[in-house]
Amino acid sequence: MSHERKDAHSAALSLSADAWLAAIVESSEDAIISKSVDGVITSWNKSAERLFGFLAVEAIGQPITIIVPPDLLDEEAAIIASIRAGERIEHYETVRCRKDGTLVEISLTISPVRDKDGVIVGASKIVRDISERKRLIERQDLLLREMNHRVKNLFAVMNSLVSLSERTTTNARALADDLRARIRALSVAHNLVLGNSGEDSRPSGSASLFNLIQALFAAHQDHRSERITVKGNDIAVGTVALTSIALLLHELITNSIKYGALSASGGHIDVEVQDEDGLELHWAEVGGPPIQAPSGATGFGSRLERLALDALNGSIIRDWRSEGLRISLRIPLRSLG
Image 1 (cartoon, one colour):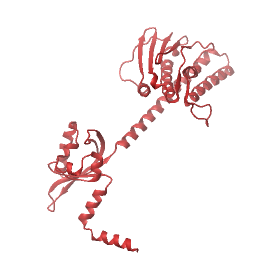
Image 2 (image 1 turned 120 degrees about the vertical axis):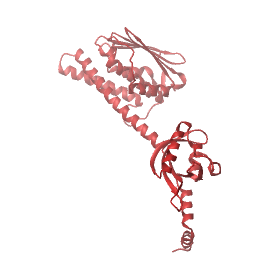
Image 3 (image 1 turned 90 degrees about the vertical axis):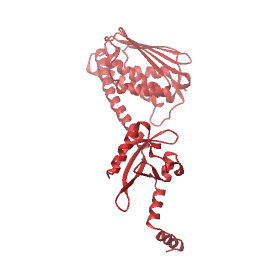
Image 4 (image 1 turned 45 degrees about the horizontal axis):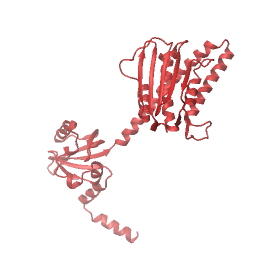
């Protein structure tokens, strides 16, 4: 054993059990706090300082409620009651408040502290920040729901393509060829949104909005390209904005396939694009079934739409007319780069 290791070993042996415990608590990655049965803070380690923003000298002697949001004070009272009853609380998830007023999601483990006679004199708390884990779980849930939503939409789109091809072909071979062409059009739209024309290429700086619209609509056109018409002013759109706009337009197309003009054989959509210090897109559905504004809770598609609009700082207005849905989409110039 080297001289340095012997010195370290001797120093470790010289520490008392209390000193060892104090060192472990102070160096813990988790916030470790103790309090009296009256809820007064009696110890506060370095991790508690980092997590809540209060220095130990600021926290010790203060009520534990300095980190409890006002609407959760009853929760802290229930915790104190449990501790007085000698109960241990395992991995309790809740929210606490930092010194700067921001909230943090935490997991609590709380144990009664007894004196040498077994009398409960306080409680020890191990506090772990679970904000990042919560965000990851929420993100995973969002992605799974988005995947489920898109798969369901894909079924609706494919069913629409089959129906459209069936109406415009006279034999099985022609039907297959027409379907292949429409599926290729969907693939072209997908590649355009990704900003590439092959697996190994990289996104470009910007793309034509008209190219995006026409690529997205191509699979749903009739042979005379009259099912969806586009007019107005073309706009260059950056790659990031292009993805969000494609998501919005795909949702509008899918909803029209399910409920609107594209669900009827004679229905069509007129799109007009204006460049007025940004993007103004006007969408008019004609020849579809009678419609009315939806009531009740909105679906996941509405949530995706809202996420895309938030990313673009955009707005959308729907006018549920008896002759067909009218939509106005507005995206400011600063969001198109």
